[in-house]
Length: 390
Image (cartoon, rainbow, N blue to C red; front, side):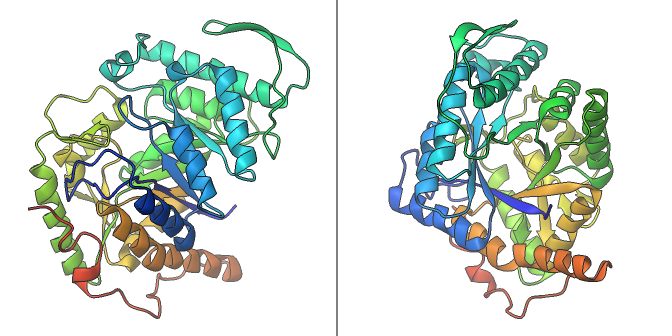
C-alpha cells in the first residue's frame, strides 16, 4: 500500500505563532482550508478532540461536504459517547462521505483532562474500556440481527443498527506510547499512531506494536502513523533561521492554551508519549537527518511537537527514513496553519511520492531531487514573516 499523508483541520486563522486566540469557526477559512487539503494531495485530516473544543463529528461531516477525497479522522474518547451511538454516528458519516470515515481512539493521557468530563478511571482501566469499545463498534457494523452485550464497561440488550459503513467497516486507529497502548493497538488497531521520535526509538516502538499483534494471533499488523511538524525553506540556512524564529515565539507563549491544548508549562506531563519526547530533547536537540526536539522542549511536549527542519528535499528524505522503518502514514502539520499546508502540498508530498514511484519502477532507492519549480521567496513561505506575532 502506498504511503499516505495526514494533516489536521483548522477552523480559523488562529495558530501558535500569530496567537490570535480565536475560538469560533471562521466558515470561509474552514472551507478554504479543507479544500487546500484536497488540492494539496493529503489523504486524511485529523479532527482533534479536547474537552473545551468543538464537536469532532460535526466538523468531520462538514469537511466531507467541502472536499472530494480527503478522509476525516475523528478523534474519539470512549468516555464521551456510548459505543452503540458512536458506531451509528461513524457509519452515518461514512455514508455521507462515500466511505471516507476513520476513527482514532484516545484512551486519555491526562487524569485532569479526563475528569473534566467525568471520567475517573485509571489509565489501565481506560485502555481496557477502549478495547471493549472497539469490539462493540465492529460488532455493530457487521451484525444484521439484534445482539446482547455484557462486558466490564458496557451492557445492553437486543441492539441492532441499520446504518452500515460503505465498505462494511471503518478503519480504527489507536495511538500512544505506553505498554497498554501497544497491547490494545497491536491487537485491535488497523492503524497505530506515534509521535515523531528519533529513528532508533521509533523502530523500538514499531517492533513493540508488531509483537503485540503477533501475541494476539494476528496474521497482519497495524499500519504505522508517525507525526511531525516540518519547518521548510528554500535553503538549509533559511530553514534553520525560520525554525529559531518559530522557537522564539513558542518559548514566549508561557503556557497559553491554544485550541484546547496547553502550550508550555513546566509540570511533568502525565502521558508517556510526551515524556518520551522530552527525554529525546534532553539527549540532544537534533537527531538523525533533520529531527529537531527544541520545539517539544519549548511546549513541554504538548501533543505532537517534534519538527523536521530543512529544505523540502531534506524533509522529504527524512520522511522517507521513517517510511523505510515501516511507517505507511505520515502526519505533517505546521505552525502557520494554512500557508504550511499549501507549502507541504506543493513541495514535500510530491518529492516523497516521486521517490517512492522511482523505487517501485526501478527496485532501487534514489536521491530526493528538487522539483522543477523552486520554493517562493522566503517571505512568502509559511511562518517566515508576518504570520509570527510580535
